Image (cartoon, helix red, strand yellow):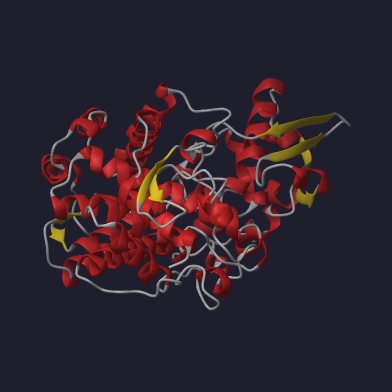
Length: 472
């Protein structure tokens, strides 16, 4: 095994995340439960739930669905639901949606092992850190140029790490879990805007759980599965082909350079604290969010009426057009990846929410009239900063008035974090798509105490009656 792969495996098994990192993870888990309940009623989620109940056997909880199933099926169903609305969080280092795979995998493993809430959160943190480290090595080439969807590719490896940690695997077994996961990672950006995009999250969660459970049973992978000549980094066309950059400053315990065995290491930083998790306040592709913030602020501040608008010009970085690939969306899922649609809806409605992407709004005459006036073009200057973080919008109004606003990030980004009130409002509104408001409040309060829970499976059982609805 290479030094880099060994360090990663030991990190997964032995790292000691600081309390602040666990708190970030706990907040991410709570947000993810909310968006999972919101997504659980979507057709993509319902189809997977039905298969999970038919083919799986076990006691693992599927949020928003009646009955129980096997651990890997539960992870898949919860992952699909978490990502079904594109309302789940994201990370600008890994360029993945982390929680939609990490949480379902960690939850399924915790139920199997009767692990504590703290163990689940530690699993989340090490999986998140591993995803970020791989993202630094692999991107932008892997995601930006080659069409791989990091939520599924890098996310599968992260989910395996999370599950392996929750199952208390040894460093060697963690390394094998990572190696097994590397051979089951896939996901194509060409499927953005279709049901397959949330399936990517579900597959990542499921494959991560399978990899960890196989490693627990003694399954052995190549020691160079990540960084060998024909390994994960090479096959996935990573920007870099070794793991040196990935392990620099990695926290926890790792093998000493002299081969004498594990030795404590002091982390230079934890990515979950240094760069953070981006919470979404709009259920659309993150590439739309800076522009949406700017448009909604302009509309409110200048009291812009939709029928005043002659044209909407949106300047973006060069990555954005590779994600927002639908000029004239025909479905709500496509609308989430359409700057013209999102911009037009923001100006017409004054807000962007789950209902924005339902059929009735997609066909609304006012939106359809404004949609052709929206143009999106690349401003190369934005490429000097973090991807998907800058935009400039210009509204040209009848009578010659021109309004312009720039956006540096969006509400919910780590530099502009959502308030507790915003997070709770989002959770309740999402959860109420599956449960009663009182049950949503009860779930919010219960999840606030996750770190103190002795047995996650017991918490899941207590929550399950409130979080169930019939599979249609």
